[in-house]
Image 1 (cartoon, rainbow, N blue to C red):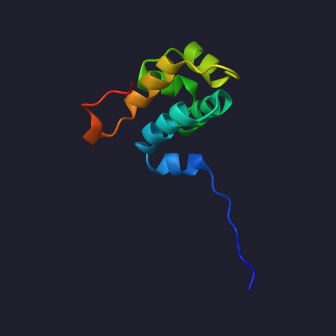
Image 2: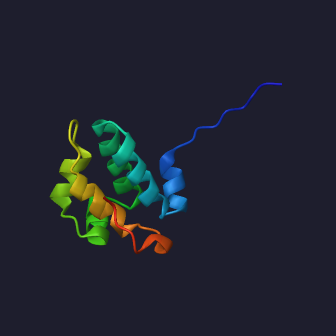
Length: 98
């Protein structure tokens, strides 16, 4: 019997659970190399319906989101933190991202 593999995409999970965006960005910011953190922000932009919509949800200017998502070496930690805060789970509302 052959093993059947299916494609798994993070964006599918983020669509289903918006609070997962917080944990996803938190992990990428702490663990990943800069290009992966930028790709993570790009995934969130996709999931939330585009850069303009994410900007409206987070208060981060469109230009800043675009620049951070395109970063190849340094991802702006302040931008990532602002995006994360917009999706912080309610049960963690009292703690702040470092």
